[in-house]
Image (cartoon, rainbow, N blue to C red; front, side):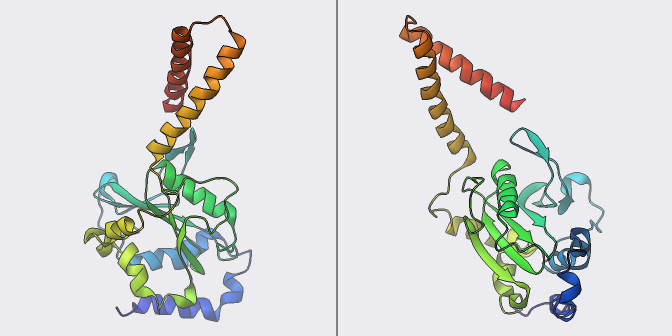
Length: 241
């Protein structure tokens, strides 16, 4: 696949003026408008909703609200097909090195994990990284954990097929995106968020049973089981609220 002229021009401009774009003064909003938006437009996505679709059917929703650990968060971009989320994109300014920035990776993976998305992306245009969001994120994870694709802007032309075959709108519509997900399904550490939550509940059950029994030695087994289950039910109820 031939790299689009728009991508070649973006790469050339970034190379020629890299001192400006790598300056801390060059912010994320500028990077989004001048590089990241055009990059994903070249992949076929209607970033600006030029087709005038209703909110429910936009290709891309900017800063769509989601719930992460009980708090409201907003990924920079939510890419969708027919109103169904396919992947998130978090944008960073080029001065931030995605390859070593653990906070950025953790943030993106939490978004994807909480929304039950298989894949999501971080990009500053200078760098692009694709993460498997089925692997539960841990705060101390290195940025390489769950990262299944990484490249820099000077590789975009040579690796355009690799990018387009996963992240383009056409790839999503033709099923290449889902096939890529299936091909990585058995990677070590992958788990559905519901499965992980159930496993967490089992840990709570054991801890609660020991704690309640220690403080109430005369409590009958049946009453102990009821107390543990009632407590867990209330925790889950509050979590859902």
